[in-house]
Image (cartoon, rainbow, N blue to C red; front, side):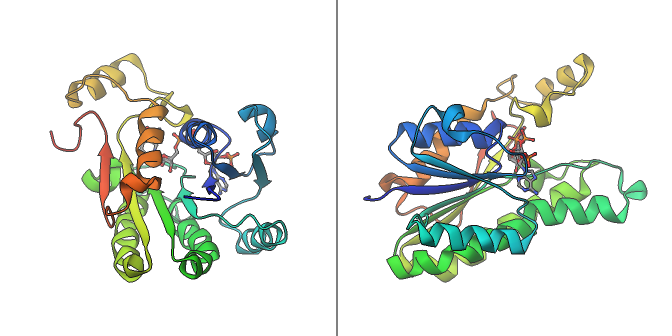
Length: 240
Ligand SMILES: NC(=O)c1ccc[n+]([C@@H]2O[C@H](COP(=O)([O-])OP(=O)(O)OC[C@H]3O[C@@H](n4cnc5c(N)ncnc54)[C@H](OP(=O)(O)O)[C@@H]3O)[C@@H](O)[C@H]2O)c1
C-alpha cells in the first residue's frame, strides 16, 4: 500500500501508544489524538507523526481536525478507534453521567471519528477500520454495565458497517483485548490479580504489543479478506 497513513485515537499512553510505535516502525505516517497535550515526535522519536489534542466526544473539535488534515493532504487510510474510558459502578448505583460519559467516549466517539474519514476511504476505494473493543463487550462484566454495553455496541457497529462497505474494499474489524497491562488495569490488589489470573487460561496479563501486532496485521494486505470480525486477544479468557 502506498501512502500509508494511520489515525489513532487515545495515543497518549497504553495500547494506543504501542500501536503508534508499531505503525511508525512499519512505515506509516501516524496521526494521533488524546485530550492531553504531548510531544508525539519526541515520544515516537520520529518526524512522521502529528498529534491533535482534542476530545473525541466533541464533534466540533473533531471536525476542525479533519479540515487541518485536508489542508496538509494527510487523510488516513487506516483508522484505529482505540480511546476508551471506564467509570465502573454497580448498576443499581450507576449515575446518569457515568453511563453517558462511557457511552460517549467509547461508542459515540467511534461514530464521530469514522464519519470523518470514511467518505475519503470510499473515494479511494481502500480503507481499514479497527475498533478496540473489549472482552467485557462479549462476556459482560459485573460493575461494568456501561463499559460492557459500549464495547458490545462497537461490535454491532463493526458488523453493520463492514457489510455496508466491504464491496468498496474497506474492512471493519474489532479487537477485543482481555486484561492488558496499562494504566487502565494497574489498580488491582494482589487478591484481585490472583482471581483474574485464575480465570485466564494463559495465567497472565497480556501486553500492549499483543494488541498492536494484530492491529498491524489487520491493516496490512494480509488482512484483505477479514471483515466484520471481533478477534479476542485475551490469553483464552473469553472461551474459558
Ligand atoms: N487495558 C486493558 O486491559 C484493556 C482491556 C480491554 C479493552 N481495552 C481498551 O483498549 C483501549 C485502550 O485502553 P488502555 O488500557 O490503553 O487505556 P488507557 O491507558 O487508559 O488510555 C486511554 C487513552 O484514551 C485517551 N482518551 C480517553 N478518553 C478520550 C477522549 N474523550 N478524547 C480523546 N482521547 C481520550 C486517553 O488520553 P487522554 O486521557 O489524554 O485523553 C488515553 O490516551 C480502550 O478502548 C480500552 O477500553 C483495554
